[in-house]
Length: 107
Length: 124
Image 1 (cartoon, rainbow over the protein chains, first blue to last red):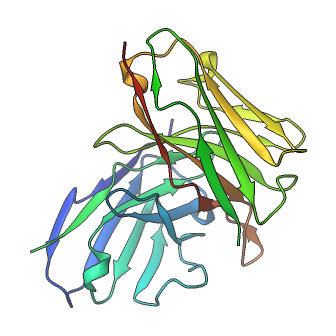
Image 2: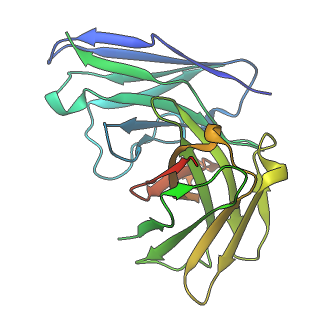
Protein backbone atom coordinates (compact mmCIF):
# COMPACT_ATOMS: atom_id res chain seq x y z
CA UNK A 1 0.00 0.00 0.00
CA UNK A 2 1.37 3.38 -1.03
CA UNK A 3 1.70 6.02 1.67
CA UNK A 4 2.08 9.71 0.91
CA UNK A 5 4.05 11.62 3.54
CA UNK A 6 3.75 15.39 3.50
CA UNK A 7 6.25 17.68 5.16
CA UNK A 8 6.41 19.83 7.04
CA UNK A 9 3.14 19.41 8.90
CA UNK A 10 3.03 23.16 9.45
CA UNK A 11 4.79 25.92 7.57
CA UNK A 12 4.86 29.36 9.18
CA UNK A 13 5.58 32.10 6.65
CA UNK A 14 4.82 35.72 5.93
CA UNK A 15 2.94 37.07 2.92
CA UNK A 16 5.29 37.54 0.01
CA UNK A 17 7.53 34.66 1.04
CA UNK A 18 8.09 31.49 -0.93
CA UNK A 19 6.49 28.26 0.26
CA UNK A 20 7.88 24.84 -0.56
CA UNK A 21 5.73 21.84 0.34
CA UNK A 22 6.90 18.26 0.02
CA UNK A 23 5.03 15.04 -0.67
CA UNK A 24 6.97 11.76 -0.67
CA UNK A 25 5.55 8.45 -1.86
CA UNK A 26 6.57 5.27 -0.06
CA UNK A 27 7.12 3.48 -3.35
CA UNK A 28 7.35 4.16 -7.05
CA UNK A 29 4.24 5.88 -8.42
CA UNK A 30 3.06 7.23 -11.74
CA UNK A 31 4.07 10.87 -11.56
CA UNK A 32 1.18 12.05 -13.72
CA UNK A 33 -1.20 10.56 -11.17
CA UNK A 34 -0.22 13.12 -8.52
CA UNK A 35 -2.45 16.09 -7.73
CA UNK A 36 -2.45 18.87 -5.14
CA UNK A 37 -5.48 20.42 -3.44
CA UNK A 38 -5.96 23.50 -1.30
CA UNK A 39 -8.48 23.49 1.53
CA UNK A 40 -9.62 26.45 3.56
CA UNK A 41 -11.60 26.10 6.80
CA UNK A 42 -15.19 25.10 6.19
CA UNK A 43 -14.64 24.64 2.47
CA UNK A 44 -14.23 21.72 0.13
CA UNK A 45 -10.79 21.03 -1.29
CA UNK A 46 -9.93 22.87 -4.49
CA UNK A 47 -7.79 21.41 -7.25
CA UNK A 48 -4.51 23.30 -7.62
CA UNK A 49 -2.23 21.02 -9.61
CA UNK A 50 -2.80 17.81 -11.56
CA UNK A 51 -0.45 15.58 -13.45
CA UNK A 52 2.22 16.67 -10.94
CA UNK A 53 2.77 20.01 -12.69
CA UNK A 54 -0.30 21.14 -14.65
CA UNK A 55 -2.48 23.98 -13.44
CA UNK A 56 -6.23 24.06 -14.08
CA UNK A 57 -7.70 27.15 -15.66
CA UNK A 58 -8.05 29.88 -13.07
CA UNK A 59 -5.24 28.79 -10.77
CA UNK A 60 -2.64 31.58 -10.45
CA UNK A 61 0.81 30.92 -11.86
CA UNK A 62 2.43 31.49 -8.48
CA UNK A 63 1.44 27.85 -7.82
CA UNK A 64 3.69 25.28 -9.42
CA UNK A 65 4.32 21.57 -9.03
CA UNK A 66 7.26 19.34 -9.78
CA UNK A 67 8.27 15.72 -9.48
CA UNK A 68 11.50 13.80 -9.02
CA UNK A 69 11.13 10.07 -8.59
CA UNK A 70 8.95 9.53 -5.54
CA UNK A 71 9.31 13.15 -4.37
CA UNK A 72 6.76 15.76 -5.33
CA UNK A 73 6.88 19.46 -4.56
CA UNK A 74 4.31 22.21 -4.52
CA UNK A 75 5.79 25.69 -4.64
CA UNK A 76 3.98 28.93 -4.01
CA UNK A 77 6.33 31.59 -5.31
CA UNK A 78 4.97 34.54 -3.31
CA UNK A 79 2.37 33.92 -0.67
CA UNK A 80 -0.79 35.98 -0.91
CA UNK A 81 -3.09 36.38 2.11
CA UNK A 82 -5.61 34.00 0.55
CA UNK A 83 -2.99 31.22 0.22
CA UNK A 84 -2.89 30.44 3.93
CA UNK A 85 -4.64 27.10 4.04
CA UNK A 86 -4.06 23.37 4.22
CA UNK A 87 -2.59 21.61 1.20
CA UNK A 88 -2.99 17.95 0.34
CA UNK A 89 -1.24 15.82 -2.21
CA UNK A 90 -3.16 12.92 -3.70
CA UNK A 91 -2.14 9.90 -5.72
CA UNK A 92 -4.57 8.09 -7.94
CA UNK A 93 -4.24 4.35 -7.95
CA UNK A 94 -6.41 1.32 -7.35
CA UNK A 95 -7.47 3.17 -4.25
CA UNK A 96 -6.83 6.92 -4.38
CA UNK A 97 -4.94 8.16 -1.36
CA UNK A 98 -4.20 11.54 0.18
CA UNK A 99 -1.25 12.77 2.12
CA UNK A 100 -1.72 13.99 5.67
CA UNK A 101 -1.62 17.64 4.66
CA UNK A 102 0.58 20.68 5.23
CA UNK A 103 -0.86 23.71 6.95
CA UNK A 104 0.54 26.99 5.70
CA UNK A 105 -0.01 29.54 8.43
CA UNK A 106 0.77 33.20 8.83
CA UNK A 107 3.95 33.82 10.77
CA UNK B 1 -20.17 24.87 -14.79
CA UNK B 2 -20.58 21.53 -13.09
CA UNK B 3 -22.00 21.66 -9.59
CA UNK B 4 -22.36 18.91 -7.03
CA UNK B 5 -24.63 19.03 -3.99
CA UNK B 6 -24.75 16.51 -1.18
CA UNK B 7 -27.91 15.85 0.77
CA UNK B 8 -29.04 13.51 3.50
CA UNK B 9 -29.46 13.23 7.27
CA UNK B 10 -26.97 15.05 9.42
CA UNK B 11 -27.43 12.64 12.31
CA UNK B 12 -27.32 8.85 12.19
CA UNK B 13 -27.57 6.43 15.10
CA UNK B 14 -24.82 3.89 15.77
CA UNK B 15 -25.28 0.57 13.95
CA UNK B 16 -27.63 2.17 11.42
CA UNK B 17 -27.03 3.04 7.77
CA UNK B 18 -25.71 6.37 6.57
CA UNK B 19 -27.35 7.35 3.27
CA UNK B 20 -26.34 10.35 1.19
CA UNK B 21 -27.11 11.57 -2.31
CA UNK B 22 -25.08 13.78 -4.58
CA UNK B 23 -27.00 15.74 -7.20
CA UNK B 24 -25.01 16.71 -10.28
CA UNK B 25 -25.97 19.76 -12.32
CA UNK B 26 -24.38 21.50 -15.29
CA UNK B 27 -23.17 18.24 -16.76
CA UNK B 28 -24.16 14.65 -17.38
CA UNK B 29 -23.43 11.91 -14.92
CA UNK B 30 -23.06 9.46 -17.79
CA UNK B 31 -19.40 10.36 -18.18
CA UNK B 32 -16.48 10.23 -15.76
CA UNK B 33 -16.19 8.66 -12.32
CA UNK B 34 -18.19 9.92 -9.38
CA UNK B 35 -16.65 9.70 -5.94
CA UNK B 36 -17.32 9.90 -2.25
CA UNK B 37 -14.58 11.26 -0.01
CA UNK B 38 -14.82 11.99 3.70
CA UNK B 39 -12.96 14.00 6.31
CA UNK B 40 -13.26 13.32 10.03
CA UNK B 41 -13.20 16.45 12.21
CA UNK B 42 -9.71 17.92 12.24
CA UNK B 43 -8.35 15.09 10.11
CA UNK B 44 -7.28 14.47 6.53
CA UNK B 45 -9.14 13.23 3.49
CA UNK B 46 -10.17 9.61 2.98
CA UNK B 47 -11.43 8.25 -0.33
CA UNK B 48 -14.48 6.02 0.12
CA UNK B 49 -15.22 4.83 -3.39
CA UNK B 50 -16.42 5.66 -6.86
CA UNK B 51 -18.88 4.66 -9.56
CA UNK B 52 -19.08 4.93 -13.32
CA UNK B 53 -22.37 5.32 -15.13
CA UNK B 54 -22.31 1.67 -16.11
CA UNK B 55 -22.61 0.89 -12.44
CA UNK B 56 -19.02 -0.27 -12.12
CA UNK B 57 -17.73 0.53 -8.65
CA UNK B 58 -14.46 0.67 -6.75
CA UNK B 59 -14.23 0.88 -2.99
CA UNK B 60 -11.60 1.64 -0.39
CA UNK B 61 -10.56 -1.79 0.93
CA UNK B 62 -10.85 -0.53 4.50
CA UNK B 63 -14.55 0.27 3.99
CA UNK B 64 -15.52 -2.16 1.26
CA UNK B 65 -17.54 -4.50 3.46
CA UNK B 66 -19.85 -1.67 4.55
CA UNK B 67 -20.12 0.56 1.47
CA UNK B 68 -22.45 0.64 -1.50
CA UNK B 69 -22.38 3.36 -4.13
CA UNK B 70 -25.11 3.53 -6.75
CA UNK B 71 -26.05 5.85 -9.60
CA UNK B 72 -29.37 7.01 -11.02
CA UNK B 73 -28.69 8.42 -14.46
CA UNK B 74 -32.34 9.46 -14.94
CA UNK B 75 -32.03 11.80 -11.95
CA UNK B 76 -28.39 12.70 -12.59
CA UNK B 77 -27.38 11.77 -9.10
CA UNK B 78 -25.43 9.12 -7.24
CA UNK B 79 -25.68 7.81 -3.73
CA UNK B 80 -23.68 6.44 -0.83
CA UNK B 81 -24.80 3.87 1.70
CA UNK B 82 -22.53 3.06 4.62
CA UNK B 83 -23.91 0.51 7.01
CA UNK B 84 -23.17 -0.42 10.61
CA UNK B 85 -21.87 3.05 11.38
CA UNK B 86 -19.98 3.98 14.54
CA UNK B 87 -18.73 7.25 15.96
CA UNK B 88 -15.61 6.77 13.83
CA UNK B 89 -17.75 7.41 10.76
CA UNK B 90 -18.54 10.94 11.91
CA UNK B 91 -17.16 13.17 9.19
CA UNK B 92 -17.84 15.69 6.49
CA UNK B 93 -18.76 13.70 3.40
CA UNK B 94 -17.89 15.13 0.00
CA UNK B 95 -18.89 14.01 -3.44
CA UNK B 96 -16.47 14.74 -6.25
CA UNK B 97 -15.95 14.13 -9.95
CA UNK B 98 -12.84 12.40 -11.18
CA UNK B 99 -11.73 13.02 -14.73
CA UNK B 100 -9.02 11.13 -16.60
CA UNK B 101 -7.10 14.20 -17.72
CA UNK B 102 -4.46 14.17 -20.41
CA UNK B 103 -0.95 15.43 -19.64
CA UNK B 104 1.59 15.20 -22.40
CA UNK B 105 -0.10 12.13 -23.82
CA UNK B 106 -0.42 10.40 -20.44
CA UNK B 107 -3.44 10.06 -18.23
CA UNK B 108 -3.46 12.34 -15.21
CA UNK B 109 -6.63 11.59 -13.25
CA UNK B 110 -7.77 14.09 -10.67
CA UNK B 111 -10.82 15.36 -8.78
CA UNK B 112 -11.88 18.54 -10.53
CA UNK B 113 -15.27 19.34 -9.03
CA UNK B 114 -16.36 18.86 -5.42
CA UNK B 115 -19.56 19.33 -3.51
CA UNK B 116 -19.58 21.67 -0.53
CA UNK B 117 -19.69 18.74 1.87
CA UNK B 118 -22.20 17.57 4.44
CA UNK B 119 -21.44 16.87 8.07
CA UNK B 120 -22.78 13.55 9.28
CA UNK B 121 -22.63 12.85 12.98
CA UNK B 122 -23.04 9.34 14.33
CA UNK B 123 -24.57 9.53 17.77
CA UNK B 124 -27.45 8.09 19.72
